[in-house]
Image 1: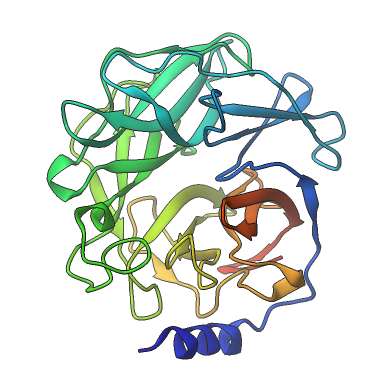
Image 2: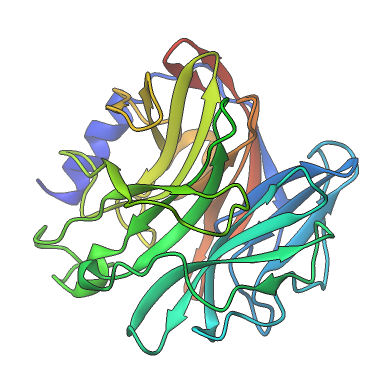
Length: 313
């Protein structure tokens, strides 16, 4: 199916309520944003830029206005990793005075990205990295885009993407021939949020309209429904989007929504993606492309509404 036809299908499916999208709220390259509400303030974290491994922005008014700081939340990556490509961070409040930052970075020994963790007693860091990664998925192309989740029974998890398109296959972001799998994995964690326990479980993979990949998973629970947000298609094309799937249990089965949340053209956006909703499902941060060369993505926000298994913005 050609790119234009896929885009036309996606636009035809996008029968959403009138959007409440605001932004850009950060007019600087701030891709793959994550949001944290803690210690009486609101924080956002993003992929590396310049010599900063993990960018930090703050909001004094629950996400209405934002200030990009010069802080690097992760001045040093784990000893297993190298700097220069620290992607898609996420931060959780562990509830005991400790914050856990999840991130992806390049592992020279694996020659792929792996996901790791770091801890701090301050939401903005500096975070101290763990000496070993959580997951690498080397044979599958690497592991990226980690995000934390805690279930109602207290069990902690992370979700992440197996980076199959990193293995090749042509196209604008790899896997153009569709040979490689790019599944979303669910990894149970110990109570400390930094130690994996048991084997990861695949909970989603790409489908007919997802192009060569799905990525950027974030998991929340809303009134008994598990909602997995993700992006599909290539981040560097106009087909990139924000989509979601729902399930009755944390391990699935997950059913993809019939239409994405946001696509190119909605609210004047181009390639919206990398979304992180708040845990209550009422608000999210995400990026959209404002320049393709060099690739520049600003942060936007949107209010959300969840009714059963239907999410709208």
